[in-house]
Length: 235
Image (cartoon, rainbow, N blue to C red; front, side, top):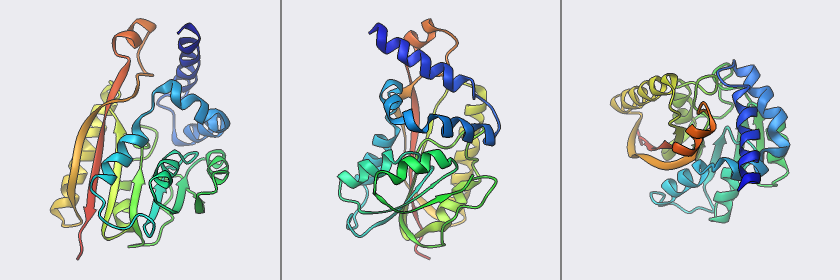
């Protein structure tokens, strides 16, 4: 247990050094982290990919083998790995970190990988193209902004699915982001762009990396998170 805690503290300190920095600094963080990322994920208790994929599967009626998936903020390919184990075969990945895309390429799962820093650059995806668009864990201050939700919807085929997750880190900026995000989702629904299939809070989204001291980590070891699934309108 002591070795586990020490390793978690190392990762936690690394992430806190980049907290609330600008998007370019965040990209540098992930470039540096890319080779060790999948070794550190278990230490972080990062359950967001599993929560997102489970949510999609419980509502996805189409053939998995035929579906074209856009994996936005794909990182090293954790979401694609899970989905491929469950029958999905066609993936396009997008990420702002070249280092992460290099690791994703090694999986052999992606037919195409595209470099783009979302929020400052447009989503490199054709309109009405994808059966499924996934964006897991990327929303946040200094990360992907709320406005990108419309781009995700734009890239989805009519009748296709958009699945988005976000972590409920216990800081004021995250509370504001959640409110802004859900306001945008509701506005898009009122505009007839998509309909909500599922929107739920989930326990144990990941371990709490933003607490102030070790005692806080013990008292609030995990944060919750939100999983949103929308279906694009047919018109």
